[in-house]
Length: 274
Length: 311
Image (cartoon, rainbow over all chains, first blue to last red; front, side, top):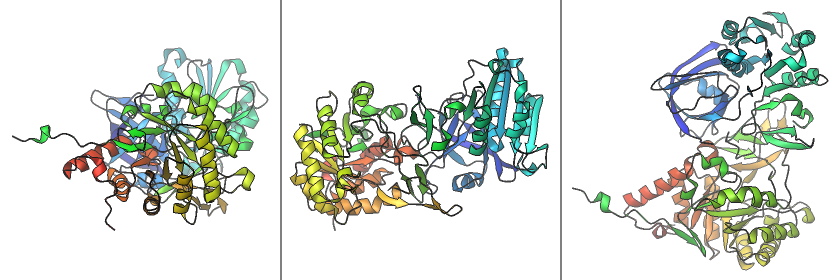
C-alpha cells in the first residue's frame, strides 16, 4: 500500500441539512482515485483534542489538471465532526487516503439494488455514479431504497435521483415518502428480485444492516455492506475497529473494518458478537 | 559564503548495551503492526528499530468490540492482544521485515511462565530478530489474573524464564500500574534483563452517560497518547536513578521535543506509539526534529544530551 498524507484546503463546508454538512476539499493531483466505498482519515494538524483522526467515506471525487477535489458528506455526531463542521473555507486539513477496500464492482449483475439508511447514502451515491459511468453497467436496472429519520434528515436525494430513475424514499415518521424503515419497504419488494441476477449493496446504521441480514438470511442474495466503526489509525495497525466475521471454515475471527473492509459480505458478519 | 553545508550532521546512533541502533527512535509494540501497515508511509530503513505487535504462542482472537475510545489528549484501548501467533509471525511477517536494514524487536506475551519460554525459544533462532521485548503487563493466569509486572518477584521470575531461553538482548516492558515502578525495574535488572522499556498504558475507563455503560466492552482499557507523557517522564526519572541497564522511554511522544525530554532524563532511546495512529509520518518527523535540535544547539552527538537533566 502506497500510503500518503495530503494537505487539503477546504473550499466549501456547507450545512445542507440540520447537522449535516457537505465539505469540499481541494487536494494534491497525486491523490489516488478513490473507489466507491473507500474512506479518508481527516485530521486537523497538531490538534490534540479531539485527538484521533476521523474516518469519513468519500462522497464524490473529481480530478482536474492541477488538483483533485474530494467531497465528504458527514453528519455531526460527536466532538470530531463538530470541529469539522466549524471549519471555514480556506482552512487546511490533513487527509490520509484513500483507505480500505471499496465495493467489489468486478462482478455486477444486470439488476442493481442499493439500500441506504441516513448518511449511508454517501458511499452508495458514489457507487451508483461510478457504475453508471461503466459501459458494462450503464444499462443495468437499478433500484435504490433510501431511508431517513424524518424529512429534515434527508440528504443527498437530489443527486441519486439524477442518476437513478427508481429511488424509493421512506422516513421513520412518514414526513416524507413512505412511512417506516427502509428495510421494511425493501422486504415488500424482495420477490421482484432474482438472486442470481441481482447485486445488492447497502450502507446505514447498524440496526438497519442487522435487520437487512435477517431479511436476506434465508435467501441466496449476496449483499455487500459498508460498515462504520470507531477507528484510531485507519491503516490496519491499531486493531481497534474490530468486526466479528465468519471465516472460510465458519469460525469466528475479528477483522479490521479499516483494512479488511469497510466493505464486507453481509452474510459473513456475526451480529451477536458486536 | 557559509560553512553550513560543511558542518557534519549530528551523530544520532545509540547503544542499548549490545543492541546498536542507528537512531534512538523505535516504534512501540501494538502501534505499528508488523511494519507492513506503515511501509507505504515511512522508510522503515530509517527507523532505529521496529517493535512488532505482541506475539503469543498461539494466535489470539482479541477482545470483542468496542475496543477503543478517544479521551482528552489520548485514547483507551482494550484490543486484548489480538495477534497471529509466533509461528505465523515467523513464516508470514519476518520475510517482509528482513528486507529492511532496521532492527526488529519481537514483543512477546504469555499467560504462564511456560508460554513466555516457548515464544522466546521460537524467536531466538529466527534470522532478523535482534531482540526480545517482554510484555509483563498482561494478566498472569496462574496467579489469579494479577499482572506479571505488578510484583517484583513474579516480574523477576518471568525475566529469568525468558533469559534462560535466549541469547538475544532481553528488554522488559514495565507497567505503570504499580506503586513503585523502580522496584520492579531493579528486580528485572537483577534477573538478567538487558534493558527496560517504560511505560506501558495506564489502566483507565470511560462512561457513556446516555446508556450508563462503559464505552469499552472490556470496561477498562489502556490509556495512551500525549495525556500520559508527564506520568511517563516521572517514571523514567524514577527508574534511571535506580538501575544501570539502559532505559527506553515510552509515553505520549508526539514531537522531537517530547522525545528529547526522555533522553535528557536519561533514557537511551524512545518508542513512539499512539502518535503513529494520528500521524503515520511521526517517526520520520521526530528523527529529523532531533537532528535539527542538535544542529541548532551545536551538539555533535545525541549521546551528549542523554542523562543531562539538571534537577
